[in-house]
Length: 125
Image (tube, rainbow, N blue to C red; front, side):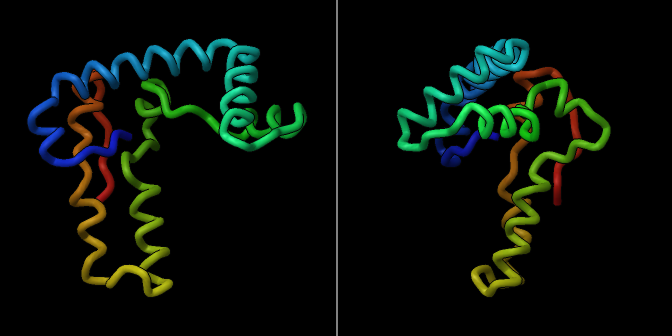
């Protein structure tokens, strides 16, 4: 998922497509090499103030998949589904007015990712 202001999407769309293509290449590379993923993750979290034990990181890696082209091409994948559920949670807690919930799904534009990766998928909402 890319989060960007509307003006950036409108004025720099080509750059966002190129960015998403480069991001996908990096995801494919790190997903294919468990030790690269482990070392990169350990370094990233340590540099950002969180120390993982080897066991904890290995467990994280087992239960968390990267959202790659292959993942999004699965028949069960729905872009934005998690965000809609989070919006519903905040609405249930009184943090988002129920009438504002449609704004969550209305803010999705999956076309940049679809264009960058040459795939289609369902979009929540």
